[in-house]
Amino acid sequence: MNRREKAQKNERRCRDELEKDNWAVERMQYSGNIYQKRKDFFGLWDIIALRGNEIKFVQVKTNRIPGMDMFKAFKDEHSIIQCEIWIWYEEGISAKYSLEWRKIIL
Image: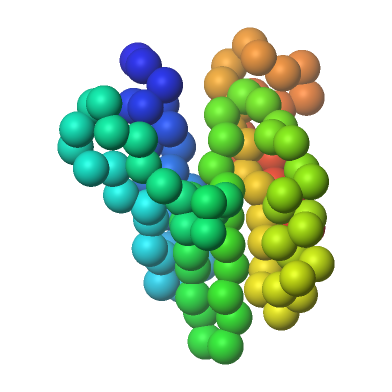
């Protein structure tokens, strides 16, 4: 499985989990052109979720924690928005996490 397929699979996995918790979810879409890079929401977020008066932005990663500076700066500027980074760890990658999410809430 290539990186794009892995990313899409984990973004769908995240979307499904949020929808189970009654969030309305919009996921960043790929163009279909394998050579065209997609652009995340505000250049940072893969998923936007809404539930009642709540709004949540989620960055989805696989097996690694991203650099946090830009995410923290966004959160500081937009404090009313829930900002989270969800990291899916594949089997054998992490001693602590395996086939599960690690959720970092900013």
